[in-house]
Image 1: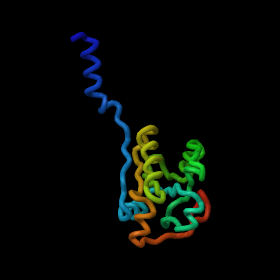
Image 2 (image 1 turned 120 degrees about the horizontal axis):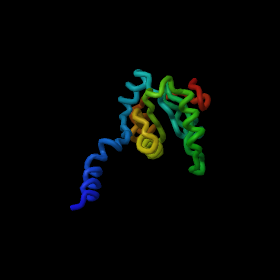
Image 3 (image 1 turned 90 degrees about the horizontal axis):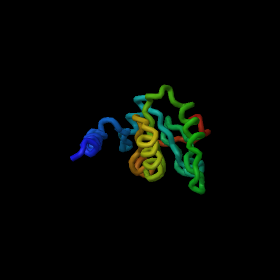
Image 4 (image 1 turned 90 degrees about the vertical axis):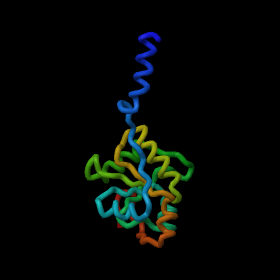
Length: 145
């Protein structure tokens, strides 16, 4: 085995330690409610029509990610979220209707942008509503009611 091959193998063995990517955390409605009490930033990424239909989790902030055509502006969305954060280390919990969109966005934030404190509500608002948890009216994109 050449020195070059040995170095490649060693780098592959130790890469997980050097190339660590953040992981997305899956939360139940109970853990989301506890996260609200612990000052986590809850971001509802659904559309205004969805907020109007079901309301939002009390204390959460409605900031749409995907438009009705599935398009998004990552830079604008991140700028809006950063305006709401009290610190770069503040935990962010994403919410959508079923958990699919929040999972996609959360994985992107955790793995591609290496944001360490990102979670999402598993099964989304559907799981929140199924447990008959409270909701409130969504006022504006950057302010809760």
